[in-house]
Image (cartoon, rainbow, N blue to C red):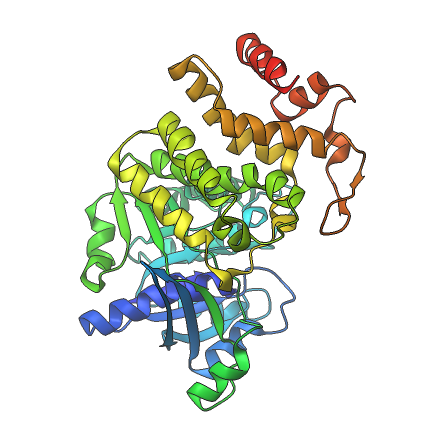
Length: 425
């Protein structure tokens, strides 16, 4: 099957293209990726990757009590170019026997600009291609959006509709757009990218330089919202890959990831940095903090979300992933935009736990207290590991504990707000 892929960055190459390689090896069916630069001005990177003919994916992580490293060659990317600079080549490729369009263009990549009357971004170039396919009466496409926006495929489809109206593509385009199948997704794999700590050793192992070498963790999960037709198109289960196709549970998987993985990260930031621990793996493996992190995750986040065996199993996987030293995950990076992150990642657990148990989750409440303390020292706070600049400090409404609580959790119910202020006092 031929696949048009908007995005040539480390994530898609370490995640989706790696999965296609595994599927090809398991089934004998070859998949051809035509990779497209999602923005203008990337110096022909897509073409360079395709011209290389192959690249390697280094995966590292814990399997039980064993630290495992794998190295896979990926050669599914066959062609690459820019829709901006190679428009004719792009449209010609899109008129071939394409079965699927995949995208990962960052959250900012999907938008509609009504002032523009020519293709100028990912959705408008895709709209142009769909118009050409509609006019040629070619089969409809599956479109799988892997951006981190909430329900990114729905957002993409709405942008395509708007471009159809703005650019006056007419009813033929509108009918074709409705005949295509848009799949929302959840993607889960931490991808640091080029392995700065291991590239010389890996180049020596493969016997040549590989500038497109990328790295990630062993864990991977792809959740696709749709019917079984997408599983027939991409039978990932035949390769033993961790893929879930669901008609109606995408929201649960999204909430599970945000509340467990991201919620544990954000809760740990002020605790770890206050203790002088800069990396996630240091904190998750530390004898004084590992039990706290496990209890936070299982006894509070899982209990509030869904106290099921499956949810606790995912939490165990997350805790194992946190102990992976190859990821080099910095709490200072995770700390960016903590004001908005706290509301999205911690608030649901705070509210659900309080409503179920009639009290606050103690460990998360302690973490919120430390977060409030962190933002109580001004824009720059001195920490054991050095000063930390709080770039979103301007979002704090005032100096009092109540001001900080209202900044992190605007509109919190009076009962929870009162309990939280009492606990933090």
